Length: 93
Image 1 (tube, one colour):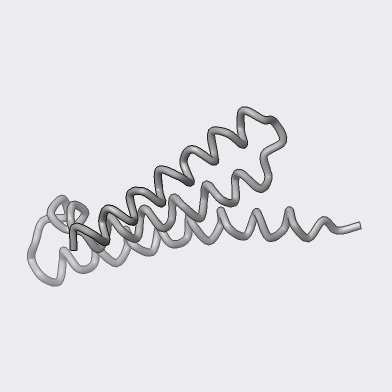
Image 2 (cartoon, helix red, strand yellow):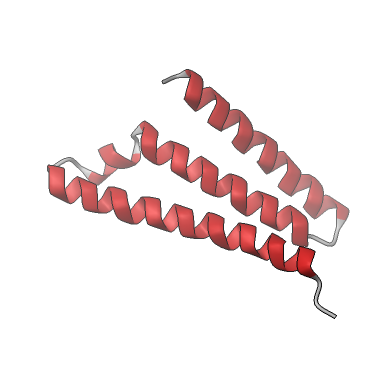
């Protein structure tokens, strides 16, 4: 029988990695179009927020597919860290 919760959990981390890759690709393109350095684009607030959102999705997905307690605790700590980072980046706006 298909375990749908596992499929959903895998979907979260795949979507998170896709978001990080899309953000990297877009900001690489943007740096070329605007003439800015890639380092400057990647240090920008918009890239940082997208990466934090991607890390949040990846860690949610990994916490859903983790079997061991230490893996779930570690993924949960990354979830909390990503949420704190997103909240702080919203306040710094």
